Length: 276
Image 1 (cartoon, rainbow, N blue to C red):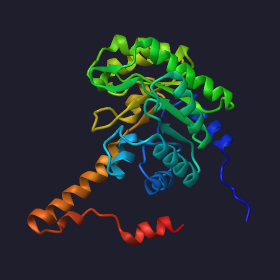
Image 2: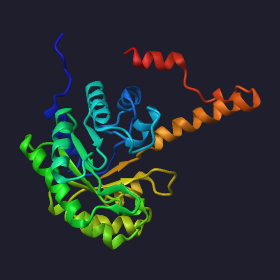
Image 3: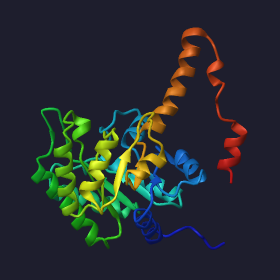
Image 4: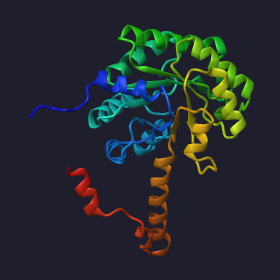
């Protein structure tokens, strides 16, 4: 039987088209099963989550190796027919040359997009300087262009996540990353309509990704009206699954009760879905 699965080029082309107009949700699976389920629910693209993946392997976020992440990306890409955006942390390298090498390896997995953060992981110096961070984005851009140029590059400003919730600094960084070649801009931690609208206006016409990682008064329609192009949820789906698991397990361990299974998915339904 001839395969009808989309090619890597087709996925990347479709991913760029999604960013051209409108607003879409790009949910974050943490393993092959959750990726296939989200695809089955009709989402047009998926994004990996560094935290969700790390927790599934018994690690804290930002503590898995580059090789582990690359293998994970290859697994998710191979298991799905929709574009996959890689949460590629800060490029798994201390310098721009290393970021370029990492990005080349990520592109080889077939991802349709990838993000590069400006966080260092060092509490004493949580962000790379603007010059360092911009050069890292520029190196990622060159690596993608040398590989054909069709992988979408996301520039991330982590100011709000590392204790520097300065909107002006965030916007300055995002504008610099756009000029360095980022196709899409992302500042996790934005929460108010005013913050979101300011970022969208500052980097226009480049598309903006918004993180909605907890309950929010904003609906997708509200977010679209603010000009956001795509919405991701980070580790929220993984945390939701872990929350249900932990509540049910604690009831067994502490009270000898089993009513934590009340909202469990049907094994018959899961077997039917994954058996297709």
